[in-house]
Image (cartoon, rainbow, N blue to C red; front, side, top):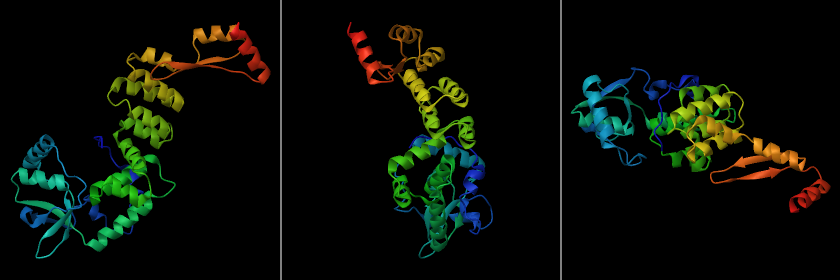
Length: 288
């Protein structure tokens, strides 16, 4: 999965969390937080993440040395006084790397975890959720319950590619997230904006054009132009236009509407006709 920018969850996540369930599972409160010895905590074999970036772990370890572990991990009680990790394996590894002896943890029972997990899955399946609410909910299941995106997709009855595309929305710039939440742009616009993450200046320009009324198709053509090497916004914008001086000239010559649609390589000209008779006229005219 791509790295995601961190944004406040706001009402997006709170709308997904059942109000009758203990929210301490979220790690957002210091109530019921215990200091557990690292040696008593075992990682789960079901953790979706198998490989961790060493440089990133070292950075987190340095932060832990200075500030401690800010967000508690989540564990469940196992046999003989040991604990099984539910969420927070990266924090656990970094704490060990930092030389910590203990770590803040929230201890939940399997029954409580299963209840919250089921409620979260049911809520993410709601048809009235916005794309960003779905993305927050799916990422919450991934982070807080240690579920792989493939497992989440199966539980939600969705294709893995669908879940992957939804979660990728979390990588949008803050302004684009706000525009999507406020229904100023659509999910299609958002995907085009997201695809320009390696071109921040052009990404901001595309967001502005989408807010000002560009269609999803126009946004896609803008992206195609940028990725084909046209990094100048003015040139890319010109390539988005369906009509150019040349198409207007050709249209006058043919006495009909002519449009151009550019693609990654080349493009196509579209010549409009309103009837079979007009189509025959155009064919005869072009044939001459």
